Image (tube, rainbow, N blue to C red; front, side):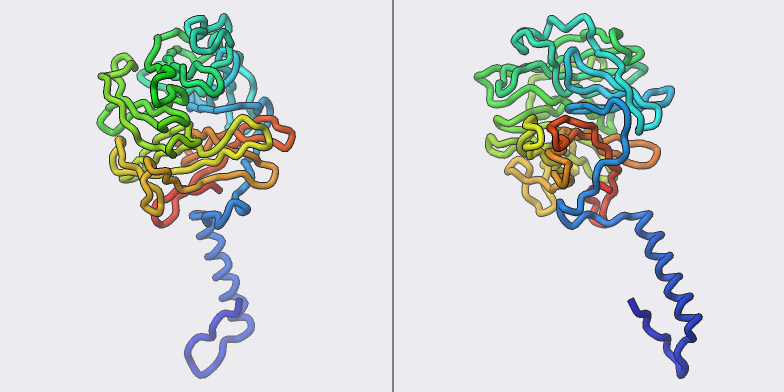
Amino acid sequence: MRLPAPAGPRPPSRRHRIALAVTALATTLAASAVAPASPASAAAYPDPGRVTGDITVHDPSVVIRPGGGYLVAHTGNDISLKTSSDRIAFRNAGSAFPGGAPWTTAYTGGSRNLWAPDVSYRNGRYLMYYSASTFGSNHSAIFLASSASGASGSWTNEGLIVESRTSDDFNAIDPNLFVDADGRWWLSFGSFWSGIKLIELDPATGRRAGTSIRSIAGRGGGAIEAPFIVRRGGYYYLYVSFDLCCRGASSTYRVMVGRATSVTGPYADRNGTPMTAGGGTEVLAGHGSVHGPGHQAVLADADGDVLFYHYYADNGTALLGINRLAYDSAGWPFVF
């Protein structure tokens, strides 16, 4: 790039031109470090950040531990747990229910594989909402467990929160707890059928408050699941996963987002399309050897917002993906 000459009778010297160019380059680099550019297309999405150790996961959820470090819970037999001290190196930490969870077997057909936990730390205890179901069925349930330490075997069953039957038009899986600025507790959940639902919880018990159920996103029966709500600035952002998971390297999962000025909606995408009418702005999709990234969770960490998700490697293994999030000038999130 050639810099324009300043006004005046004499052009700048060669030394002056070099100094101006160096200054301009330094300014550009500094700006990009503060506000990275949003990817223009899926081909420009960054690869996941560096992680090491035990990183085979599906449907990850994460919480910062009160004493430091991270606890990850994810789909697996009896709910799988992992820990990390630095958000880079992860190690297996057993399962939440090493003795099994017999209260779930009516929904799992006897399988010990429990899905999509949502882990958080509230009022001095870890809380975990998680799903019990079988693939392709909406005979499903969401349960709650609590723990003082988050360690394997320390989790107490707090009972059933919400269930769906084959006669229902929704699917009670993929829970996410959100606590708003007024201290009200909300649980979003859902998969396929009529889409993503929202119910209110009693903060004293973590259980359902009332019978109201709201629809906040849907694709007319199409593939949408894994809701996650966060508030940033004046907006509530609803992240979801579109399309298909669980097909190894053939998975087409992708991370989408919409936003609203109320936790109950209406949520819309960047173009103004309501999320209840299939709207969603893409945040991350498959690229290169990253296949089907999705079932996302957003963590507010010391260095800003961080997106946790799973993706599939070329050999079909589900792996932990982590990228940082930034927001463009219009307030829409993007990964970098």
